[in-house]
Length: 142
Image (cartoon, rainbow, N blue to C red; front, side, top):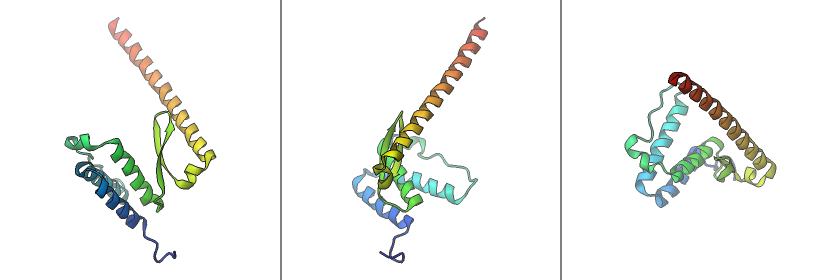
């Protein structure tokens, strides 16, 4: 396929959105669309304040499926590739990778290592904050 007939990343995302529209319930699909529009607006207008998306009344529709599909759509827009996969890399982290990365064990191992390191640092920071909170509480109680 030559470059003249290759769909743009935006066209690929539109095609993927159409498949989602056919298989998702209407309300989660609507929330997904609103969130994607907000991301595109923010990218197109650096420095612009973000709107709260989803709106408080729509938070029940922000499901794991919506989160995952939003990640896939952003990856399609950024890379122009439609072969995106949601991967649980451990330590409570998920990410989206293309088929090449998924097939490359060293890349996946690196992602798992990064996730474990981020979790370790997060746990350390939480322990420090708990220590500060405990010390403050003890001082206030004295």
